[in-house]
Image (cartoon, rainbow, N blue to C red; front, top):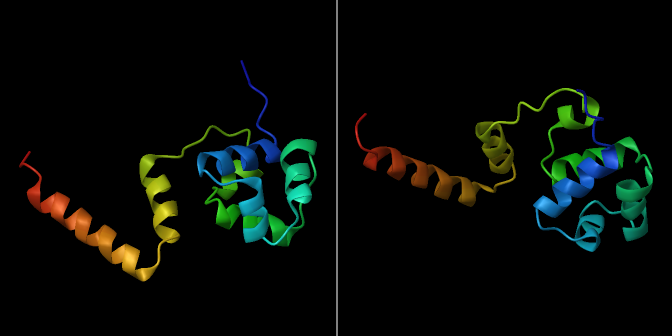
Length: 110
């Protein structure tokens, strides 16, 4: 049984909610009005490429989930982690690297 792929607006809304971001905050970050974002999420409004680009990057959404919603998601934990890392600044990356190294160094032998 095939399920209908999620709409673009649903994908954006779900990603925004999962990130714990309000409509107001996201609209400010991508430089659009709250009403415009509401229309994208709930009324099927299609954004310009510039707005689409900002939304995808701000919410760390896989472009495949937008352009190929009918395909089963191959979103693994590693891919999710890579998207989160891409949003980190240099200091945060250093903390993540040090933490990962400490975890590896203290992991029991297999």
